Amino acid sequence: MPNLKITETSLRDGHQSLIATRLTTDEILPILSEMDKAGFYSMEVWGGATFDTCLRFLNEDPWERLRKIRANVKNTKLQMLSRGQNLLGYKNYPDDIVEKFLKNAIYEGIDIIRIFDALNDFRNLRKSIEVVKEEGAHCQCAISYTTSPAHTTEYYLQLIKNFENAGADTICIKDMSGILLPYEAYDLVKAIKKITKLPLEFHTHCTSGIAQMTMLKTIEAGIDIVDTSISPLSSGTSQPATESLALSLKETQWDPELDLSSLNNIADYFKKVMKNYQDNGTYNMKVLMTEPKTLQYQIPGGMLSNMIFQMKALNANDKFEDVLKEVPKVREDLGFPPLVTPMSQMIGAQAVFNVISGERYKIIPTEIKNYVKGLYGKSAAPISDEIKNIIIGDEKVITVRPADLLNDEFEQLKDEVGDLAQSEQDVLSYALFPQVSKDFFEKRKAMSVNVVQI
Ligand code: CO
Image (cartoon, rainbow, N blue to C red; front, side, top):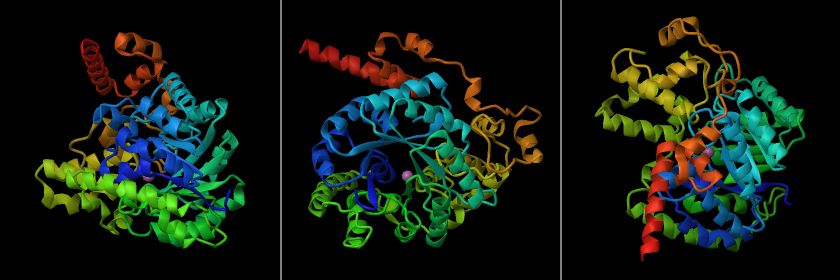
């Protein structure tokens, strides 16, 4: 293996960042054997929003997608992204669901599971780490990178120590908003390398226009693995382009030794696919515009486009700048949570409400109340009593791991969904996205009846 390894993200983060995760399995399959030849260390192909999108918009079984990908990728490690106790959904699931879900993902061929928690609350990762280790898969623990007075280098190093003690195989600096500056990245990688021998990976987004510079500095500082995406699915709100990095490092000590003709074939294939998405409007060129304001507001690409959409729906486009300014204030009020799913959506919605209603915290979504009650985990900085009082009155804040309050629910969900579910995996889909999965199962049933009649 070369000194610098590449995780190719096209099939997960690439299309999630640029075309709302709309690549279909039929579009993915024809290029897999070529991707398998390119020399990537791993391919991120599952998790994140891919699961939800398969069921909700593509009428596809995400488990089936994974099986098909595995069948076509024989040499390269397959990687997925999981949000700790939230798995691929948007709330905390009980331990039995986390356990069965990860076991099934590993059984179907996932080699590496990148686990993170939106709040960097280590307690929310504990169960996932335990399961991944037990199953003999590769456990990568990610820090959700953000900046705030509470997010010091010391803070991250402590977190990494916890990961290492819990048995992490590798560590990832996950810069979901693309805000890690080149020289800070250099120092951070050096500092991490001093306290751990675990291989270190860097994940970022090009949103603010600094990703390639930062990536190069992490490489100079000794990073082991970086995340890139094939050119047609790169840049903008996505990752730096795989080929550009490979060419930049050719014949240096960090040459990732990728097969350049393979990369060209993959790029040619995805150029055609992306042209279709451009033509049908799914691929909006806006996502490719460099937005240095991200560095000021620390708003990830996906959140930015969500907020633009929300403001449009509310007919309040003129207040967009006000909302952008409100986001960091809400964030400070709430103890500086990193802006990553689901916190990014929650903070975004609260900021929109604060501006639109004309009075701060006049409207408070239930999720924000639950967050302040501690049901998502602990924030990096404490939330002031004043803000607590405004948001939850005299309701109590929990001090235990949030999932400790949840009872196992697999058996109950299995009964609830009945014969619509044909497998344990169906029940797990149902556990994460009940209504969406039920709709999918019903459509699937109707289709199979039609097939039999023909
Ligand atoms: Co990402």
